[in-house]
Length: 287
Image (cartoon, rainbow, N blue to C red; front, side, top):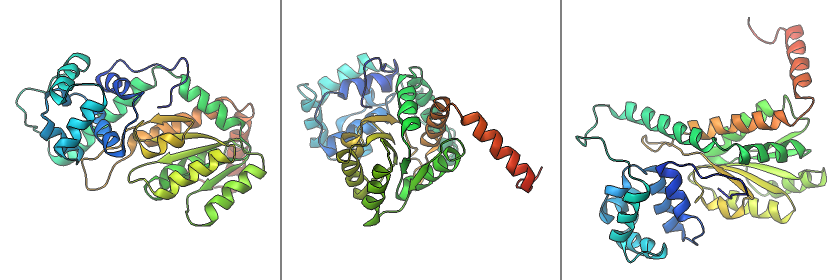
């Protein structure tokens, strides 16, 4: 996360690992290793370089180079340090009594627990809420895997924000729609970015910032490719235990940002009451 003054680092193994990596210029491969280590914070102090390489999907020499890039003599020195800063131990036995579906659910519960720890310091979310509320219109970007996150946020946000513009389709029109939002007075853009990251999203964020927009991003990690093009990035991990990633934590973080934005909109409650009254008149919902 791009930290502002007052932002706290969660005092958890994942938070302490993230603090270790911040301030280093990491290559894409090294960011992948860092992301894997944060996601498996309780395990990494006890993994060999070969095991970590397999988990991250990189080569063993890449893990060694990563340790050197962090200022250690090699991976053994990094692992010794990890046992000091992230001293959680694996459960005894080494095998799980849960099937793969249960493990996927339990992993998502752990992702939500990490998100709760991150939100112990509400400063970044509150700042994001102010930025999003002040932008008229507010473009909300999310492509491919992240399109459902952007669409869900935009659906609810439109009930309290006067002008939400959903950007969930790529192509040559994307920059045109960013330009249109800027001409209409937009000052910020909210982006949902999930793996695998489309090149088009990275390019769109770079374009948006060059056009003067402040970019607030929800991504799976502070080491995601979109981080370099975000003014404020708040991470929420995705689950990787199934064939396709699961995104409970990013979805919940989107709702948290929605709440923070609504808190900054003085007429949000009046808009909701107006919608409820019209919905009742139309018989929109089944009671």
